[in-house]
Length: 93
Image (cartoon, rainbow, N blue to C red; front, side, top):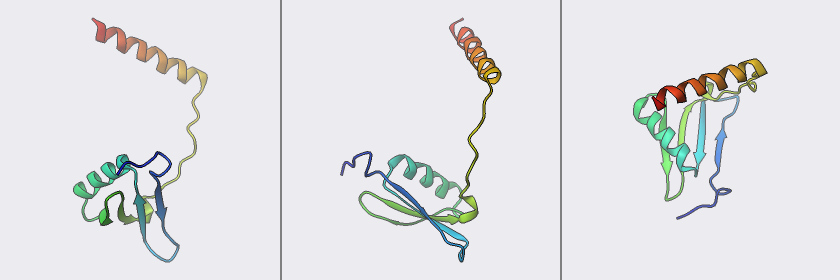
């Protein structure tokens, strides 16, 4: 079944009373990442349900994280741009 981009949702659910988070997804890219984590770390990530279009996983809620946006200065951006130019030149030769 082909889902629209809008229908390819991911929902993370947890509460203060439990140590486990639940992730429900209909996004194939997220499924691939979580399937890999579940295969590599079966004691931490578990596939707990699935149907034709979705999968549900559980894992410690401490693994859910939030990050500040990364602040990149103009100088850092220019340095990164120059490094990419150098790498591309090296690949061409």
